[in-house]
Image (tube, rainbow, N blue to C red; front, side, top):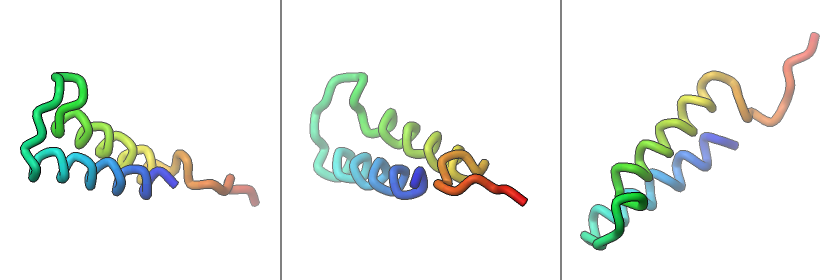
Amino acid sequence: MLGMVAAVLFFIAFLINAAEIGTNDVFSSVNVMLLGMTALALHLAGIGTGRPRRR
């Protein structure tokens, strides 16, 4: 799930950067990209995968 969130955030960051949309400092393309990287790192760490591992 967090992998898909990361992909959406990367796409939004790409659109902001490609269209050269002037946004405020909080919603810049770099900040959105960093949120995407955080979501991707959490996904790769196994957090938010949707299924708990039980044996």
